[in-house]
Structures are given as structure tokens and as C-alpha cells.
Length: 152
Image (cartoon, rainbow, N blue to C red; front, side, top):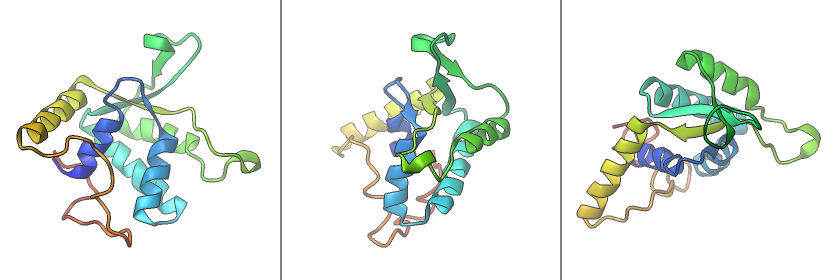
């Protein structure tokens, strides 16, 4: 598993959901690309994660059917990505910090992969803390081959 895959699985591993804003901000800073390019890249990354069954997407609704009101968005990965794309706007209203009612949550498969990689890193004496520091260099270039793709 590469660092990017470990990082994105770690962000959703606690089971409380990761707001899409967090990914766009962190990744945008590290990639040093414009917001539209970052948006397109994140939507592609999300599509891959959905196709592999590693994350789900939804929102917390006051009367949602799941834990703490979690309401998972249903549909094909492409349909879900289209719904996310409609939510994930670049220009916030009135210059406010954007908040998108869109959360990414772990799946049992994604969580199992994350835990397996975390355990492997611990056994190898590697730092198990996931971050995006080792994915892109200071100029925003990908450090390792396929380092900006989901690799399991």
C-alpha cells in the first residue's frame, strides 16, 4: 500500500466521517495545484475508492437511518461521484470557508486494509501515523511512482 492510500484510509478509519473539505484543503496545499485541478483529482480518487469498496459517502441528517443520523448515499460509484461533484463547489457563498454536507466514511473492507497496513508498519518499526507529508515534494510533484493513486 502506498502512502496516499494509507493516508486516505486513515482519515476515515475512526468511523466518524471525514468532511470533504479536509481532503480538499490538505491535498490542495500539498499538490500545489489550483482548486479546480484539486477538485477533479479528488473526485477521481473518490471514484476509485468507491469502486474498490473502501469508503462510503453520505451525510449526517437529523433523522438519518444510521449511527448518529448517518445517511449513506446509494447508487453506482459514478452516480455518487456526480452527487459529490454537485456538492463540492469551488467558490463558497459570500466568501465564507466552504463546508460541504458530504462525508467520507470507512467500510469494513477499507478499515481492514488500513488496520493490516498499520499493523505491518508497527511490526516493521515504521511510524504508523498517516500523513500526506511523504506523498508530494516541495514543488507538488509526486515522490514515488503511482504515489498519487490508490494502490493496495
